[in-house]
Image 1 (cartoon, rainbow, N blue to C red):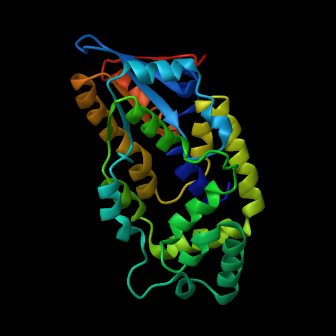
Image 2 (image 1 turned 120 degrees about the horizontal axis):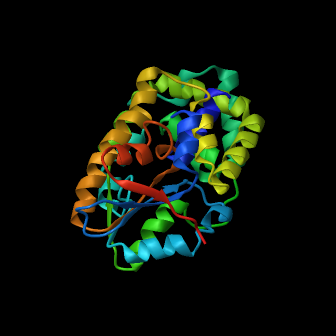
Length: 289
């Protein structure tokens, strides 16, 4: 799988070994319990797309949200002030443009594709960091029937039900992970993405089918199929998972919470499901009806 396709999977799924993934079961919805907790909490694997197929959540998912006191995502997407505060960090460094980072033919290729396929975002191609442009391109390879991507929809739904909304990571932490990749690396991956766009579209649909079938084991393999730097891979999933579990524990002790995070964080030996079990929690899959 091309590196550009790995970046696509990273953004839309966020997000162990096959034998471990099979052992833990395949499900997007998990129930978390333990002696000492006042009530049950839940973990759900999301995906950042607007394809209507991922919005068939099932009654069990809505039941879990409605009986919880709070819904926490990776980030608190309701916090518009924080998003605005960090908006400038999505921009290129002063004096740097996409055009200055890639060859003239490659720049024309990217420009032509963006003008045709991503609308107003094409006007920003010299202003925003290439990895965010890649994310927009990836999301646009799938259908966009819904107004909001699934992760944002879940937070909005819970907020309307009067639930507390929060995040188990900060904007600074997520931006720090992205910044491990240099601007030049991001630009090179963007060019590769567009040169291999037909292949990426097939991979995106394959990823979506795995998600719809709740095949966490196969999603884990897809994410691990190709690698960037070891530092980036460690920061992207493993280190973040360890931090997430600690903050989930703190939050669950306060109140019953529905955690909605990228599906790539759930499976594997270092995924959230097994990490929670290692901390003594009972984590069982819930069939979505």
